[in-house]
Image (cartoon, rainbow, N blue to C red; front, top):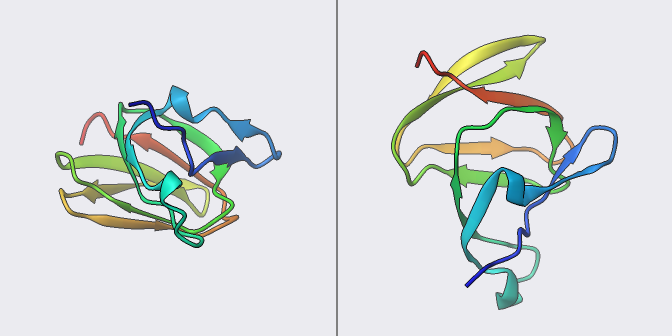
Length: 104
């Protein structure tokens, strides 16, 4: 079954970023009619994002293998190790940039 992306990313200029270019939704609760909560399992390949944001808070849990990413903070990219089971939080309307760390 193919699920639609229910947790979109927006560029800081207000343009919607096509979600299917970055990841594939494996499972989604979008049709469950939960009030203001969406749970999705996604499969992603390494990708780079520049100046994007979510319009709602997003919590991510890594259920795949450990990996290392770089996130831009205070104008500099900083390396973050994301262990299996690791959790990350993206506040709504807060721009961010990220890229996989190939040396990590």
